[in-house]
Amino acid sequence: ISLRQLATVLSAMAKPRRGEAISNLPAQVRIALVNFMEESAGPDKSLLLQKRSEPSSQKHGSSSMRLRSVQSSAGKKYSAQLDIEYIRMYTRQVSFESAIDNQLVLSQLRDRLLAAGKADDEFWERPEAVCETFTTVLAEHSASLEEVGLSVFVQMRASEWVANSHSITSPVMSLADAVALRKRLLHARRTSWELLRTEWVQLLQNGRRSMCLADAEVVVDKARQDFLQQRLIQALQALTRRDVSSCRQRRALTLTAGLLTPREHRTSALRR
Image 1 (cartoon, helix red, strand yellow):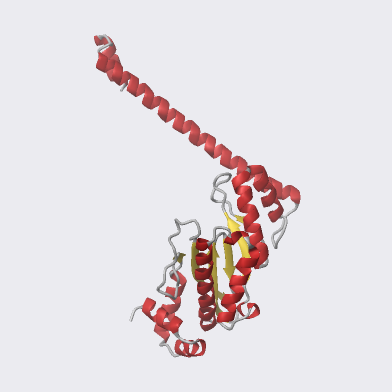
Image 2 (cartoon, rainbow, N blue to C red):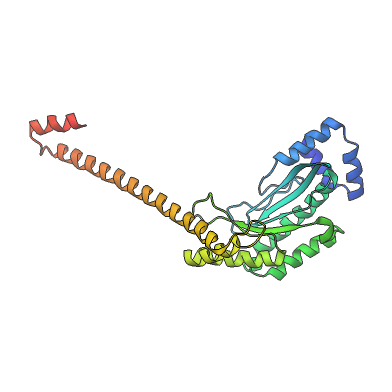
């Protein structure tokens, strides 16, 4: 039996039975399953279920899931993580058995959110609708927000304005606040650099690694200037290549038309 098949069977079991089955797995199989769960992250792929979400090329289809492991003094702990529509959610660090349960909750949540976004283009514009979907999924799994220990934040890039090496990241916040912030950031990104700059500077002044206004402005403005400098270099290189190509084309046309003297032919050939 393959590891994916094993994961699928486990996901179909009731919660108490699943935990017992995982505990009774041979040590080598359990280790292999853990490694499979950690390495099988990717866009639009559930780690436990065979179902696949809509292709990421669609308007409301960007998502990925993974199971993260952390070594602590109490041993190895695991956290389920869901990235969807520029929002990252991750559960508290728990045992492998509990992490699988949490991952099933996030997998079901992802499917519901993707389906709702596909059916309604305005779905992600309404924080209350997103929160209601999450509450419904929790209830179906007989789980609570406290039990899952969900942390949520917004993370996106703005390749129109700065290099992709920069991520605009919020502090951890409530799901409703994250959905509302996502809406503001996307609007700012579409509208102007000045509006996006304002939002980004504000975000850098909050959270565990917060900085003062002056430092935040330095970081954001440097990211923008570095981006513009790189674009300038690329534009100049493209212009140089175009000029060289045009020069060669003109020389070829002149030679074809027989407009050069024999001496000019020899000089042109030496230059090439």
